[in-house]
Image (cartoon, rainbow over all chains, first blue to last red; front, top):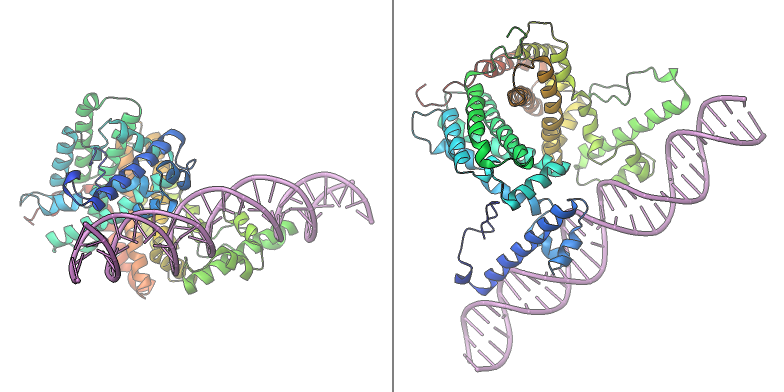
Amino acid sequence: MATHTGLDLGPDRDLDALPLRERKKIQTAIRIWRTAVGLFAERGFDQVSVAEIAAAAEVSKMTVFNYFPTKEDLVMSPMEQHLDESARVVRERTPGTSAVVALREQYLAALERFDPATGLNDDRAVVDVVRLIHRTPTLAMRATAGFGAQARALLTDELIAQDPAHDELTAQIAAAQLLITRLTLTTDNQRRMLAGERPADVLPGALDRARRAFALVERGLGDYCAGTS
Amino acid sequence: MATHTGLDLGPDRDLDALPLRERKKIQTAIRIWRTAVGLFAERGFDQVSVAEIAAAAEVSKMTVFNYFPTKEDLVMSPMEQHLDESARVVRERTPGTSAVVALREQYLAALERFDPATGLNDDRAVVDVVRLIHRTPTLAMRATAGFGAQARALLTDELIAQDPAHDELTAQIAAAQLLITRLTLTTDNQRRMLAGERPADVLPGALDRARRAFALVERGLGDYCAGTS
DNA sequence: GCCGAAGAATTGACCAGGTACAAAAACACT
DNA sequence: AGTGTTTTTGTACCTGGTCAATTCTTCGGC
């Protein structure tokens, strides 16, 4: 169904155009996912057992684990489709553009189209999932960590490949700084959505904040917080 | 016992100077911890059950959970005593010093005394724990995430308190960049220890890398990876 | 058009981490 | 010694996650 949440259970397809088996598979996957998120949003992540989800989706517990390796994946897997995006942006940037500029421009563009990956989106399903993640410690942890681990590795590799002159540690730090900046901006936007603000109203400020944040990465913190400002 | 691993089960105390009850408590806590880490180092985190640890430490399973809330805490809790360190460094820095400089100097000093928190330490117990964390996905995740979450919050609050002129988002990004830089440096040092290098040999390079890394935060990435270098 | 085989989806039985609770043991204080 | 408090323990149980077997769908041969 490829909703705005980023739920891509397999690439986008016309459901009617493929073998019965595949269709059923996708249907049950979606049914399970919807059921789970619905129950979670209603009563909290820890207050809903997998058995309960299975029952509500009219499936056995095992089947749930077949489609989603862990309970957390029921919430997180849609968001983790985009882990390689930053690496791709750097790889495919127009030559002569710095990594910072490439990622900044891409993020600004994503903001302007209200991409859920920027946090600047108030679709019901998206906000439900975001709220869930913020409310559940283990999910919050996974959101930041799974991110940190994999995305950083990808971007680091990309930076090394692009610019073998610099050493690996520099690439790691650059990747980490860029990604954590992006994450911080996104989290900030998500917080505003949870507070009930409207994306269109937030957009100008979000663009401004993003520009300043990337500038911070580009030019450094300087003597930030030196007390002499 | 307050070993180099950072295991502070309660503040440092002379064991003989306090009531029998407390002494026993500390002794069993240490016994459980040692047993667990020994078994983990030998056979891997997932291959050892807590029931087994309990048996080997001559204690009931319940008691293990009494001292360490979760299985992960058996490995991680000693390292998480120092989460507020960065915030403290910023709070107690000499006036007029920027946050970057304060944290850099503190990190350099920690390196020179081979503080395990810098990764530059090859004590048997320390390396065992580090290897364990690197080998076990869930532990690695918790190491980076628990870090990211709590330490960042603390440092952010500190930066805001110190410099109310700047907005909160800037403080968040600054905190995140500083901490992730520190973490990246530490991870790099840990990798070298795991590869068998000696702390004394690594120290000069580690100091240099740390200086360059913090310079990167201070002055920014600039047009890093622009291809025109 | 029917049947059997291959292979997937699904399942029920099982293991390990973690919690709740009450009983028992060990300690401290008088 | 005796009593009250804290720690430890045993038991029972719940939940997330894994494994071998069972059932069902699809496809090729007759």
